[in-house]
Amino acid sequence: MIFEWIRFALCALCLITALVCFTAAVLGANRFGFIMNRVHAGGVGDTLGLFLVALSIILGDGFHMGELKLCFIIIFMWFTSPVSSHVLIQVEYFTNPHLYEHVKREDREALTEEDQ
Amino acid sequence: MSVENAYRILFLGALIWFSFLLLITLIRAIIGPRVTDRILSINMICTMVISCTCILAYFLDEDYLFDVALLYALLSFITVLILSATYIPKNPTRRKFAPQKDPVVSTAADSRLEDGKEGAEE
Image (cartoon, rainbow over the protein chains, first blue to last red):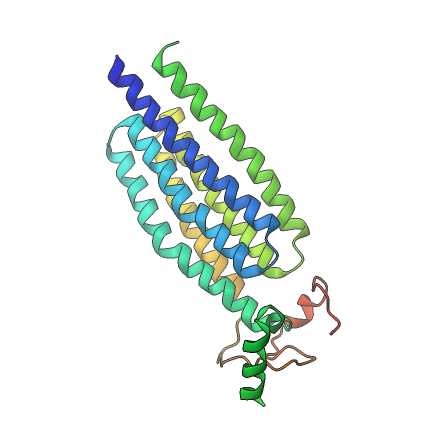
């Protein structure tokens, strides 16, 4: 019986940490002022949050055929989430005319001289 | 309290908290000033729905919901890629940092961006 409760405690710990990750992702996507910070915050939920949810389910249920599918989901998301973030930043890079305003002043001057 | 009851309360609470986060992200997708904010919000919503589906698969003891979650992950990735491909030019080059009035690369989607641009004037 005590082992069941220990397993439950581990499962609860993973799930609560996942919820903290997702909450941080949502807060970051709402509160950060620059798009690259927002995309980074969103990526936290995509990778670590989903992994911890899967880990809590595996701890709670044991490892069966369904949990193998869950592992496939995790592997797939770990490959695709960085690609999504990269593509999103590319969109911002090519469409935002005010992107250079977020570059540091001396760097911006050097880049401007180089371009002119 | 039995262990099964404790698991039930834990996963139900997680689902309720997820619904709260989904609502906030949906509001962000609606008000997001630029197109990237909206795509990012859609991506996050998809991730949270995948998590909710996985939790439901365990909660209801239905293994086929994991397949639904896997398909949802595929759809989420394709959504972001195709929406982004609308805005990325065919032959991308390094962007110039010199202050310019117009966007460096002019795509067909630029006119649609004009509505939600923050601080459009230089």
